[in-house]
Structure formats: structure tokens, C-alpha cells
Length: 125
Image 1 (cartoon, helix red, strand yellow):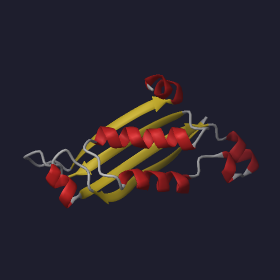
Image 2 (cartoon, one colour; image 1 turned 90 degrees about the vertical axis):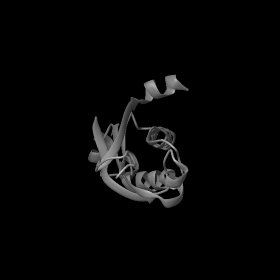
Image 3 (tube, rainbow, N blue to C red; image 1 turned 180 degrees about the horizontal axis):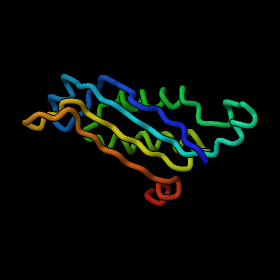
């Protein structure tokens, strides 16, 4: 087993519980880690045998472009897309952060993290 990760992806997007957040937007950060078997890709030097992180980025970018109320929903939608598009994905861990959240005080960022195996994820459906 191994992991393919994208760390510190940054997006300006229109998510948030409050309507005004969805109008003015904010900066978000996403980290994703996909556990998979990397031996075939390594031994064959083949991109087709691994999680293509360019495709992974494009998928996350599309999810981030659709306004959502909760960071939890964003995380779940990213997981859904990873499991749907990458059959070799065994486990996915996602963290989504919102910079300077409107909490009435100083906070650099709020973060939600989720992790599920394919079996755990499919049992939820």
C-alpha cells in the first residue's frame, strides 16, 4: 500500500452557512490523501496504474466551485468523487479549511477532517 496526496490546495470559493458568506466568498485550503496499492505503478513506471494527481486536482476544483453551506458537506462530496472516479482508492482522508471564519474572534482557519475506507463509505449509502 501507499498514498497519493495533494497538500495545501487553495481556492477562493463561495461556501458558508451564512448567506453573506456565499455572496462575498473566502479562501479555502484542501488536503487530500488517497491510500492505494502503488506497486504496479512503481514497477511498470505507469501513470495508468496509480491515482493521477492532476485528475484528482481537477475533481476537487469542480467540487470547490459549487457553493455549499458546510465544510463537512465539501469533505463528503470530495470523498464521493474520489471513490467514484478511482476504483483503486482504498481509503480517502480529506481536510477542508476556511480562512478567517466569521466566529466573532480571531481564528486563522477552521478545519474539518474526514477519513473513510471504501468499505466504510459504501456502508453509509
